Image (cartoon, rainbow, N blue to C red; front, top):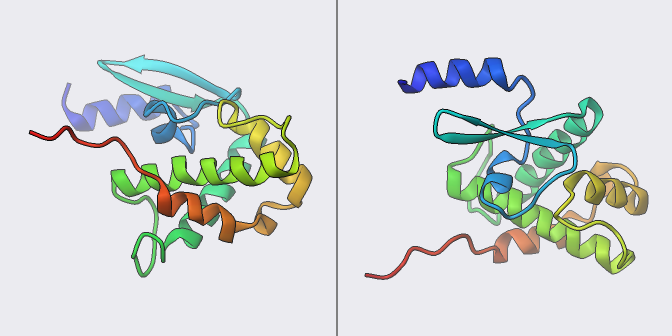
Length: 150
């Protein structure tokens, strides 16, 4: 299967791609609203919730906007290169987890993105009001998978 065919079939199978698919596939987090599926030899993640999908999309857009300085990118238009996208997704969720767990140690963690986002909304209000200055620190310090030295 060539890449164009794969993308076409992927879009028909997965009509609502999980916003945090890269971080979930990299095993940094999980979500109660997600559904994993296999296509060819690859794994995909779909979102089962319309409302949570919109909230996650809004969160990711805010994470990208606020992380531009930390990533040394002047302006972010759309998806980032893979390594930076993983930093924003996984690091951003890690930072959100830190600020939420400071408020409520019993809140859901990154093993349930939907629950974590719900707890954050409960404590901070709208997604626009989240403490991004604190969250971005986790993106800056996030270390992805290191290549083995040869």
